View 1 (cartoon, one colour):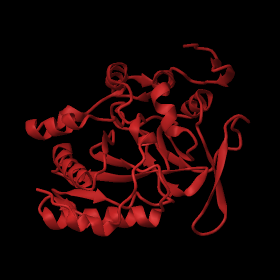
View 2 (cartoon, helix red, strand yellow):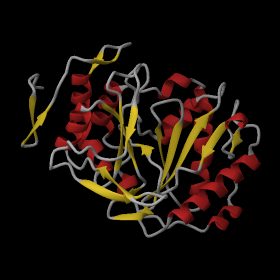
View 3 (spheres, rainbow, N blue to C red):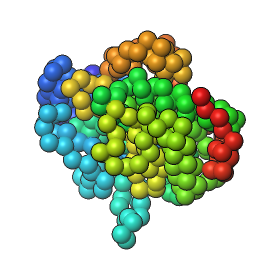
View 4 (cartoon, rainbow, N blue to C red):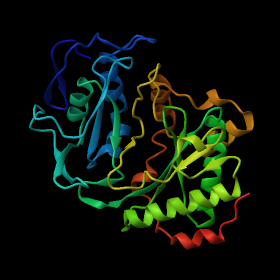
Length: 310
């Protein structure tokens, strides 16, 4: 990778600065490492970013410094960084960035945009989610092992409805389960079904699961966050770095890995950093690729009444 102020990326010249600046002090991971990771992972990452408005989460002074979310795409962006106009709930609109190609991704990385948070819809249809998503958030002392058990219950519920689901780590402390749709639907329908399932699981496993938003209820349990299914919310993207002490990554998983984590009870089994993920995609490819293309019709929420989960 070039160390100068201009980097040739996909036929475009992208300005890069302060490549030796350490962003993760515990490991010495620099801005140059950040840019290099996103270049190397881009064949697997970019399809998941394509056409989606994105919120930048920038850490100009590294993971131990202050950060900020940047919804409005900066005015100093290059002309080739595309934007999408998204209406605000209180009126008006915001022009979000879209990182549709490698030059745009490198440009964002140079802004110390460590994390990539995208909507569940594309700019071409702001009211149609392409997936249903569950964020499984453990309340200490619960951990990713308990999240893995809950993820398996979510998987089983959708299997009973004849649907496939896909898991990934959050890159932080929990797991996320995506149910690809890629068919006409609405956020009202996806959120209703997600809430219905979260409440069903809470009734079935009250000592393990909570569906209510209050943080005071989460101690020792897994919060099944159904509220991500909203046209004004973004979720961390697959293959995004996370701003933790180490450069961990939101990592797509095999369901066998999730089950093995439960069987072994080892919370460390699903902690992947950038090197782990680069090795995984070389070996496994993109385990999240079906989320982009698999077409599944969203059932009515009432269909969950027929689902049995043990």
